[in-house]
Structures are given as structure tokens and as C-alpha cells.
Image (tube, rainbow, N blue to C red; front, side, top):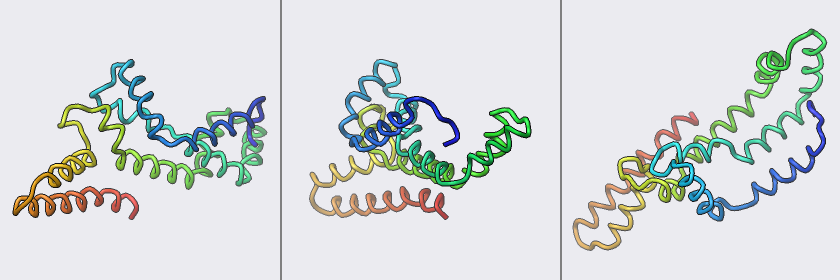
Length: 171
């Protein structure tokens, strides 16, 4: 461990415990918090809760505890570097694979999120593609006939276009 402080095991256990709670159980309390902060019907109300994930913090801790980061930090301290310089010049380059992995996981979770934008955003212009595709599917199930076939063609096309940015991000 780079930093030893009282309660670090309790903090780690609580992070793992919070990661085990399904996101749908926290959706309504999170919505009430977003509404109280007056972020409802605002894109910040969707992005802010998803930027920091307990799983991402746990993954970073796991990666940094598996590498020999402690020796690098101690060498930086011996050389007289301040903590911010040690982080920026030594720890961040060492942890760049984990940082990129957590970044990609957060971007994909924001991109694929359906429930939180559905609850928070009431303006159709702000709603993401996931909500729009779900509404098209619900509308297509109510219709029958030739318009039904055309609607499902649009849904499949929208789903392919929806997946393309994620594919580009991973390539």
C-alpha cells in the first residue's frame, strides 16, 4: 500500500459491498437526490452519478496494489518530489492501463444506461438513443401491418448506429 491510514480495510470492504448492490435498487433514491439538487431534466443529472463508480475505484486499488508502486513512490520522495509531482510523473504513467480500462468502462456504462436517463430526462431532445429505441420498440409492439415491419427495420438500424461509437472506442 502506498498510503496507510486507519480504516482503509473498512473503506475497501464498503466499496466492495456497494459494488454488490444492483443499480436499479438505487435508481429512485438517486433520482430524488438529483431532483433535490435541481439537476432533473439536465444532462449533468445523468453524467455526474455515473462518473465515479465503486468498481472503478476497486479496480484501480487492485491494480496499484499488484504493481510495485510503493517502491516508485518512495524513490520519488527520496528524490524530493512533492506528492502531486509523484502522482503526475510516476504513478499515473504506471497506472495508465488501469486508468484507460476504468475510463472505457465508465464511458460504456454511461452510453448503455437506460434507467437513469429514463427517470431523469423528460425532454425528448435530451434523451439518449437507448430510451428512444425502447420507445420505438414499445410503439412497434402496438402496431400491426406494414408500418410494423418498417418500424422494426428502423429499430435495427438505430441499434447498429448505436453500437458503432462503442466499437470505434474499443478499436
